[in-house]
Amino acid sequence: MAQRPNLLSHLQDLVTKIKNMTMAQDRFKFVFTANEAATEGVTEPIRLPNLIRKAMSLARAPISKYKVGAVGRASSGRVYLGVNVDFPGLPLHHSIHAEQFLVTNLALNSEKDLCELAVAVSIDGEEFGTPCGHCRQFLMEMSNALDIKILSKPKHEAGSFSILRLLLPNVLPKGSPFLLEKRDNCLTFSGSGGEICSSDCSHLKCKALAAANNSFSPYTESPSGVALLDNDGKWYYGWYIESASSNPSLGPVQAALVDFVTRSRGKRFNKIVGAVLVEKNNAIVCQKRTAKLILDTIAAPNCDFKVFHCSVDGAKRLKYLRDTLVIDTSVGDYAGLHY
Image 1: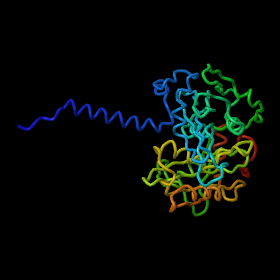
Image 2: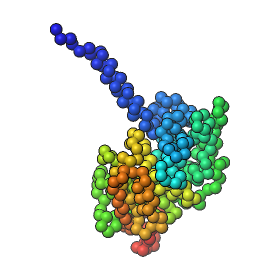
Image 3: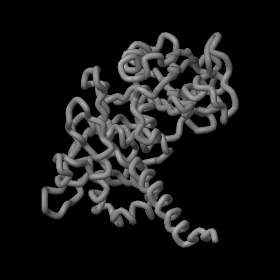
Image 4: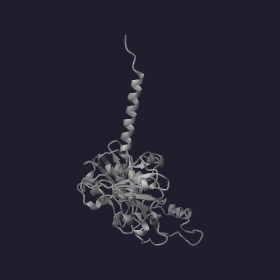
């Protein structure tokens, strides 16, 4: 007589499989809702360090061998991870700092601000301190920068927060635009680039143009965006983020690689098989050579890299400025306005 399958045993196996899948997904998690963060022990800002080991485990530091993790909370209540990323074969100035990674993670997820930040400054993740000068300047591009709370915590001691204003008191000029503010650079393809498709278009060049339209480049007016394609057909994108101090600026390839690291579930960079850069023709800051250098070094050997140029749609730009109350178009003639 044939035995009937043990239903209980089957359900237990199924539950175990689901748990294992969930754990695997959590391993590569870079964004936590408030409830998810609470299950990790982050029930209040002072407990942000409870996620630091998870962050440090996700760092990619094959050159420096020094894994840095950062954990930050936005006013939405969501908690974000940041990690440092080195690129074998490239100079270290192309690397991504953990704080830069975290801020880019915020931008990619449409957050408006950063409230608290914890950065590990020891290899065991037990000590927390202030960001380096490079990253302090990068943080200054946000509207609430001076009020961002930075955790300081010696090993085996209680931590405390101090505001960024005390670490870098310099304030950007009044009226300066800010990173994380919603923006539209009103760019469209030039010449043979063609028109952008619908918002749900899967063309890589359209994703790159969408990224360029989010680019933060108030100092050189050289917005650019990059879209990447992996071997499974999944796309990632990012945009140029400029700093008033120049050097801390983050290129569009690095920003797109932040998206890749956060969403590719541990894939290696050599799984990137396609890339598109969109930038303004004759821009003061040109990304083409640097983008090609990085991709030639880390992406798949046959990675298909294309560059498309874009320009500002004057009519669209004028409407955008009017709608966002940047200018009063009821006065004066703006027909010759340049951007």
